[in-house]
Amino acid sequence: MYKLETSKGNISITKNVIGRIVMQSVKTFQGKVAISNHKGRVKKAISSNSVINDMDITMGEHGLDLRIYVVINFGTSIGDVTNTLIEEIYTRVKELTGIEPGSVAVVVAGMALKKQTARRNIEVKR
Image (cartoon, rainbow, N blue to C red; front, side, top):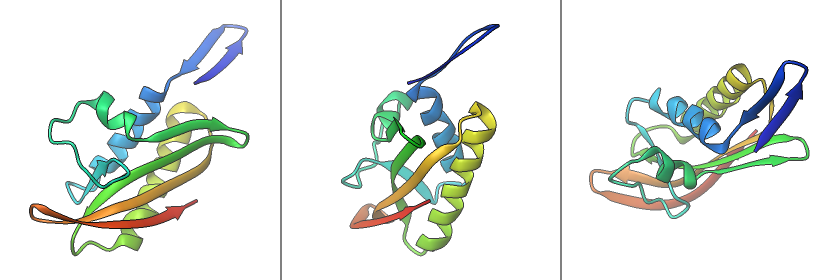
């Protein structure tokens, strides 16, 4: 995905690395937010590769473009969560990889209440 050649060697950063950084950012919400697919389905058996495959991570003209889909627990502020999550992802990716994201988008695909999920399609982007 991202390669840089230096006089001391080559540096490669894969989609899995970026995906794991995003997953760590989501964990800071202590279960109030879960990564989902674009339909709002959260995987029961979470393997990191299957969760990362649901993220849109590409290298664009202006840097790294990230779009993640989440389900937020009912009663949690969508605005607060999405803005905080965007800043958290942006900061962590920049600090840990040295790559400044061109855009970070969080799409709220659903709101969860116990075992039911109400579909939403709310995108917040930086």
